[in-house]
Length: 343
Image (cartoon, rainbow, N blue to C red):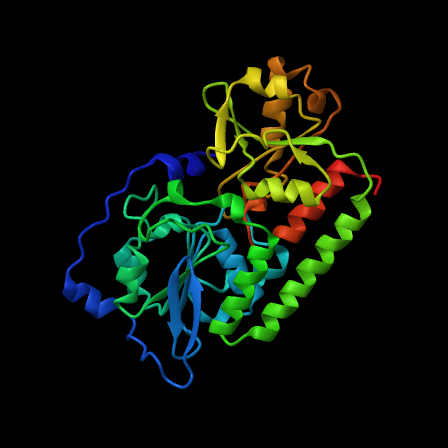
């Protein structure tokens, strides 16, 4: 939780970097427009490569897991900022890759000589980022480093922060499109289609099992330091996960931001049938660790009469589970098992 708040609140100035340092660290600029050139559009930016990128830096959980899902582990020159353990199928590959818990500076990034930066969120390219900033995508492109933001959490302008995104547009189809586009850029189209087929099959299986079941109200909740709570709003991809799993977001009508601070009175008034925790952020974090947040919620005397508490329906869940990426099928299956255990 502390790192989530830090990501949202902590101002970080981008240090000035001399042209000499940048020139020494930057990857060689690829030639554009050759016969092998492939181009896709991401957040209104043309991403063109003259051949499959070979030196990839992946920032944030969704991007790191997408890179492994596409079989790009041997091209990763560095990874940063995991919110939880990677999915088990990627653990061995991730163990072979350099990892740092916080985003490196722009100089630190360029020292790895990447030719491509893959990011799960847009803050890494923001000039007023809560975390370290790599600089704008345009400034990286000038150095021959292309970039991609997953599942279009797109700023209205390159260099802006999360405040400019339209997260309500993000669906599982957005994930599929990312995979297809990245598959083309990295020349791994077959791997991309394999991953898409697996996600689509697993999600469809859940939807079929819960199709005619009652749809309980669900809140994704994290205890705050002030006695209040933070919840995932209707904008957040967590809402899509809940819907695919056969539920409804108890806070779906809140649409001003992805994460909303609410008082305990508001949580009581919404009276969710099920509460999911929102544990974050550490590379070793598991659902077992999230039980500490379950205890914090169930032991709050003010919530003693909330349906989710009285029905023993407060369940461990991770912030990483509600990010748009290849974890989506796992997240939907997990939530469905909580909402409809008989199915």
